Picture 1 (tube, rainbow, N blue to C red):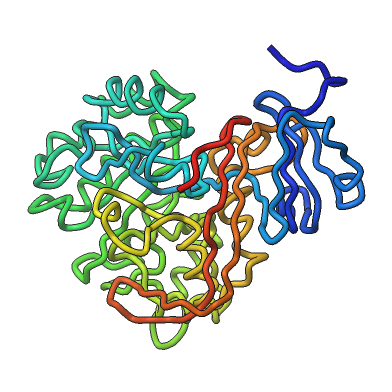
Picture 2 (picture 1 turned 180 degrees about the vertical axis):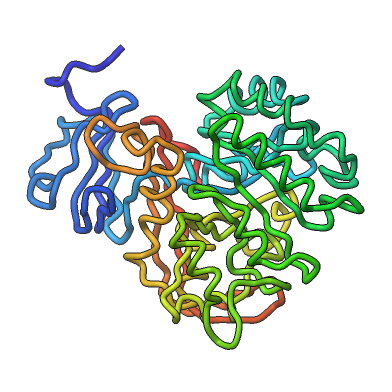
Amino acid sequence: MSTPPNTPYDLVIHAGRVVCPAMGLDGPGAVAVRGDRIAAVLDAAASAALTPESARQTLSFADSILLPGLVDMHAHPALSGSKYGIDPDTHILPYGSTTILSQGDAGAHNWARYKQETVAGSRTRIRMALNLSATGESNEEGCFANLADADVDACAATVRQDPEFIWGIALNVGPTNCRDNDPREIMARGLAAADRTGRPLLVGQRRHDDWSLDEQFDLLRPGDVVTYCFHARGGNPVADGRVRDSVWAARERGIIFDLGHGFDSFSFDVATTAIGDGFLPDTISSDVYARHVSVSPRHHLPLVMSKLRAAGMQEADIWPRVTSRPAALLGMENEIGTLAVGACADLAVLRWHAEPQTHRDAAGNERTGGVWEPELTVRGGKIVGNP
């Protein structure tokens, strides 16, 4: 039941900076919430005029940044059935990411259980890039170790059954996934499923010299997403100190580039070169999964954002790539990734610690820089426990 507009707000959060790229906001103020909706965004003067009676609960973060809840375009939320899966409410949501796209944790054969258990059973909002492999990420030998699991009919039928929750199709053609099977055949099957359903692909490209990046790009369509865009292995996006022409051409054709940091998919050298050449990722994602749970520092999207800042990205370029841009790619730009009145009250409060810290990439290369630490997450108007 909605709250009448003349009643006090349920929650007001004041912040030293209220930032929303979708609305062009960046300045001191507050966000007011009624129920699970954003009821008002107040500038400094209007927020200062609020009285204690204006809200049932008031919080203040004078030295922090209040953003729409972060949108992570590549992570591995799963309560069971995925070798990469982690509990999203424990390991992702408290760190600022309120909406997550799963990269293939489930396929046609285990989607029904995943939907009931993980999607419906989590406070975190979860959307799926359904694995072309019917078994998702449940096969320890690799999701395409058995070529028959790359089942176009089953994948397409499952996407059609659940268009609200299944955004697209996940396809990783790396050797650990394909094993001895031809990655070109697996790519062809993924494209067939995507064409049948009118859905985009989320592609983990072949990072080896046995299949060139250019040839892989030629197969993709406008709106398809390439993840791991700043890795340092074979076929990475830079050569001779600049971004490859084929990468620029792919972007011109409408291919989307996602960061997908993960455990071994981020290189400071590649990121610094690409950013210096003017090539920025379209979306910034964590690719957080089971292996990260025990590492220190804790891997989360704000830490990935901090690494990109250390690599040369400006914060004004970072904000939309974790809010409005991924929200638009998911077709949810009026519901998430924005502080617009009426949007879902998903919020993230981050604090910038400027003291130089050591950031490391997949190879152990280091950069120093500040770090954003999550202070508070709000999901659907309700405060999430602090990390």
